[in-house]
Length: 616
Image 1 (spheres, rainbow, N blue to C red):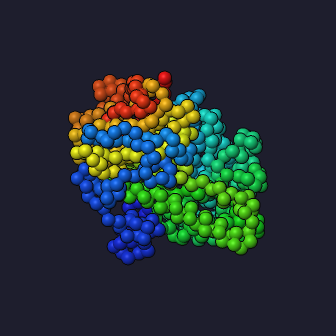
Image 2: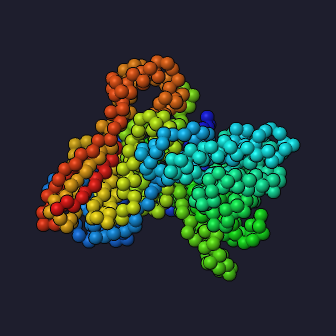
Image 3: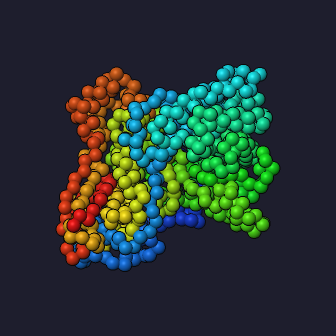
């Protein structure tokens, strides 16, 4: 977990280099091909900047949305103008797009100890369905839910009121709390040593005592919110359970904690609860998380003595050390999820071969697991006074939006169900919106639509020149026949410096269409103006606690001068509030003989969202 360390996390900075330089065990998720080798990259003349390679070595087209490899009906004529061309085939339908931005994290549940304005989340964050309370039930004296967490003579002086209060404020906003249990309360472990993140990293002395604690918490939540409501919540067991900075026990220790936790919750809510676990996976832990997965499917439950343990979701972490390290590593996220997904499938095969029935596996939840990312994005950028880390794990620069769009596109393709985010605004849920917020909010308009096949190619000099995973598009349609496009260019491409034409062509059964375009570029971002203000006023490294590239401005400004400069430009001066507002435009386009053909623009490190509605 990378939220509040003053330290560098092994999952982000050092593991890959250690594997190469020190000869240690190689990570399970290599930077290169499936065999762990670095793939060859063909440099192309249109690349340049950060993204100077093609997605395909021969520059051939790629298609999205179905298993087909070529478009069934590319509308329009051979392009005569240079630029990017997107062909959409509405008849070639694929999967329904799920809500990949459904979850947000909080480091301490007490972030929600005070209520937000009534209806605020529904209005400002319509895409958020779940608020993850990380390490919500113990591990340090502020998280341990007791009247007196220091008194080791009394083990059942429970005080669940603080967590219940936070849950109430979340529920009142129309979203669901997710209780990530752990770590073990300090007075439950005679060896109670805190690790890197300040929490107890050892198992309990008495698992029965811990079972009673979790059972009592679950019952207290039911007493407050009702059985039906609490049964709709998701539960977790620890954060990055195989990360030695979070937990120093063995795999057996963790499996035992998971089994007792699950059984305690089930004793109140019934068997069919929503529960799972969060591993690093993107890098090596102190033991192999695949052993835990197999235990849940084929092992004997340490608490109940029965075969298997309920497991309905599995989450991983996904961090890059910096924005630039993301280049050419976009497959690492998919590979991390594939590691746990493949283990589930392998363990199911073993279970079926051993005589365990599919009906039993269905009951355990393992035949319909959903896969997510419980935390991640970018760890650090340029240093501040105290650290180079990013509080929200995003940068304020406009390219963050293109990065996010690329991840969302990848998640749709790879069937990754959600990516839990930290903050989207400059002041937790308030303040100025970031480009990450704009991307999430616009992407949410595509949720529930059906992906359709499309081809994006760059044309120059009368022919197709290249394709790239760094500039690509996600396309979909709804029941009314409207089309949706999320197009992005992540990186600095030479051809986009002079040729920003972005042509959209498709079949459309109407005579006229209304096109609504939203550009997520510098004109929808305050951060470029903020960088100008910093330069004009001499603000530098020592005016920021953590990285100056981060978005949590009120929180990380440490000098009166910096805070004053920022405040003076919020609604006056540079007027950051206006700079951060997303601008959209609508226009009508004629559809000629069933063919729609129009152009807009796509610049480097930007995102364009379009909705195309038939109106006549």
